[in-house]
Length: 56
Image 1 (cartoon, rainbow, N blue to C red):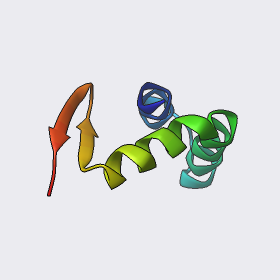
Image 2: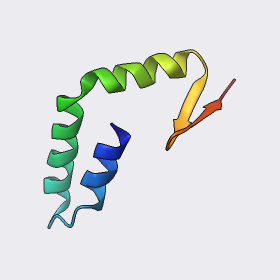
Image 3: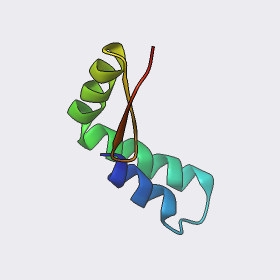
């Protein structure tokens, strides 16, 4: 999912509103991925790219 967001951010979209709408669409299309990230954060795991970092 983070890859989808990164692709949206890297797109050459004219204005900020269009970019925000693209990000919303990416999030709405894959909500379960964001739920998984939230659950991992509760467990103390933060992801940066594809690398897990354990946080206190």
